[in-house]
Length: 591
Ligand code: TEU
Image 1 (cartoon, helix red, strand yellow):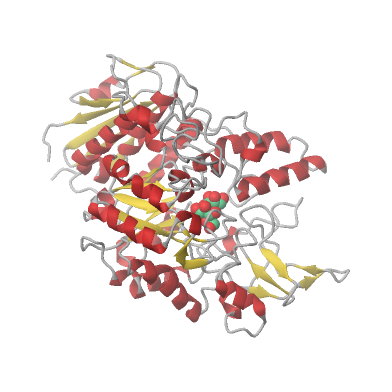
Image 2 (cartoon, rainbow, N blue to C red):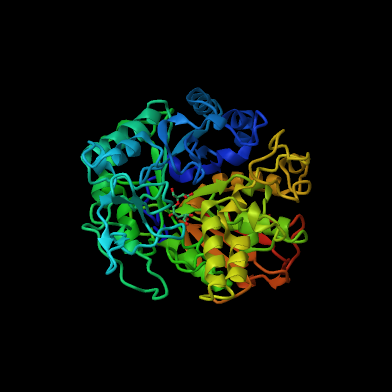
């Protein structure tokens, strides 16, 4: 056997080979003209989704919610946000996915609820309410003047502190995100049981095939609560991730969730249900593996976010949107790390570069100008499909959607995080703490704000891009007449046609693309990204040009290899054209 025989010792599983497609319900398709996407809208597009060649739909939260954080603030797990439809509509969607040979997973958002959830309303009603302990309540501390102070100095994700004072019962409650998103207390067994019943079993019983598990590493907090060390002397609030990320009981909680709930369910075609956890602020391989090592029976896989943090300030600090320019070798190091870390383990990895929490990949990682954006989209498609792990695409990626135009006013940004960072920037600039902050944060938001991914899907060239007959909740991209699905469906050279083709190729050669070992070949090159994949005797070479200039091909690596696909209609000998991507493959001794 060659040294590359069965390199990963990985059992083949349906979810490893599947391509997932994330749908953000607010922005996909509005069927009734109220300006909000909805479930019947998704149903209208089910044939389109299936035609992409994806295997699983991941539906972002469609639960009842006041929408302070776009549905990640849930007020009732067992109901659907009325503008999106009804529970019956979701049942129809589950059915339609299955009839079209796709599975469907929902978002499981159980680190926190909305403050409008009945559980929190009860909890906040009195100190002796039976659900008081389902959330984290703490008495105030007092400063020398006798003013009440929050129990700790922690900074929350969306700018601001993690504690909000409740007048009624004279205590603070904890929220890692917005003040409308109080954290559930997983230490309380009754609370965990309620979560399992309401957020999980309710939907699993309706036939869903698994979950994307929101903020999966934050349920266990370091107790008793204490201050985070002061790393930002200009502020009272301090980055405090170590107080809630990968906390002392986290693995116990996830194991319980798996053992008591998930392990009792199968997919519609009688396979194990799937989980993919959102593992933020976790860059140490040794801390990631325990969540996904198969013998641990926790999660099947996780999203690790080093790639989407490229160019951002340290996560959890007030610098997230203070853009720092990066060079290609940095990106390559990240990809190499998270491609190869599962080798020799029983864990599994994921491949993605977009989701609803990030700017569009073309705008961030390549070039979104009219001249280069189509080439950029196709090159990035090859960057993705060659990589080992489960592939996740985000709606609109397949037609090369790009960030909102730079000319847009900050008022067009609707996201709570963008708004809070922008308000903070204005405050810190105007009080003289950081005079250039506004310009820097505006630039960062133009590149990386979560809003960019939330623009309405561009279906066609009509006034609202075919998204809605009414006024969309978020402005439609000015370029929608150029970038839209209808136009691309008819065009052999479009990003959409290319995506369909390369997703098929990924399946045809899944041994080397999905399961192969990864080797980076040009670490220090700032213009090209060349990586090799191997599976037993089979070899593939991905050659990607990240510049607007022609680049040389790595000729010696190409010996004995055949061109499988180029992102240009016509690949020229000996040179990679601007933003061209190619895949070469060695068919000899094919397995
Ligand atoms: O995000 C969790 C999270 O902590 C970050 O990884 C994420 O990047 C976020 O944008 C904070 O900057 C999840 C959801 O994906 C996000 O949309 C929600 O806002 C958040 O949870 C709270 O539920």
